[in-house]
Image (cartoon, rainbow, N blue to C red):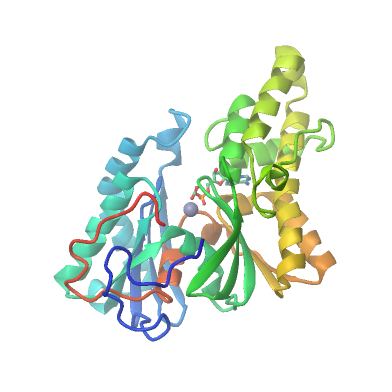
Length: 360
Ligand code: KG4
Ligand code: ZN
């Protein structure tokens, strides 16, 4: 699979030049509503980050134990205008300073995406501005290209979030080539499902990370996925067997013993996910021989993963770029970052552009 930088999705012929030549000018207002975070940001075409505002719906969905798509869309609708106004104010600009509007087109929850896309189209069309339709995953891949210590291609990138897990090669920030990805659950999903089995609240990743700090990661041996042995690519992942292994272990231990060993279970389960990710990263570094590794996605906030990948990179003599957590989890700054490398669609060609739950 190769990432974007082709024609604007669904609009053959709407490309306004080569990926670099088509960089949108000036101040970019970016909007991201692909899942359960309502996000707006202002970045410049040069990669300066002026604001990055996020209204998380975490608490709203926690009572259901996961994201409810209908609830997410309605909440985006309620708060997006306020989040956008906040992003502009924090950046010290007004709508009249904005020269390009960028928005996540997909992948994600279709209803949630449509709220952001409709709002972005309206904002752009009212001023006859160009619109950039961004691939959410491209955003995760280039999030680190913002700010004073901007990440520069070429690099390898591990993206591990609640919906996606893949390793990509980035020779040019306008595109990325996926070298391996999960065949079933995403790493964040594995964290969330494991956390649920251990009685932790949604979203379980951060809670499991905290619980694991007091446990022994070698106390239990959970399977490390190896899809290559069952027909997958060398760098593919598989996490679905892991949660089943935890479920059986909890059943075997019984209620009282599970309660007593919760921290050990969390630490051992986390160790299996981290080792699976670290093993593929090590393989990719050896094979691709790129000078730097960048990490992104919500799971990049995991303390053990950060430490483990630092060691892997140090041993391989490769630099590691770990963006601040607010650029790893879903945010609109990364959508603005990707917009810098994506052809803009001129007004009014984007008016019938549709959102896409999945991108090719
Ligand atoms: O990138 P993100 O904010 O949203 C998606 O695009 O999915 O990632 C959210 C995921 C959730 O599954 C959450 O449990 C996980 O990232 N996560 C963590 C940690 N912080 C967030 N997983 C493990 N350890 C963490 N500290
Ligand atoms: Zn994401």
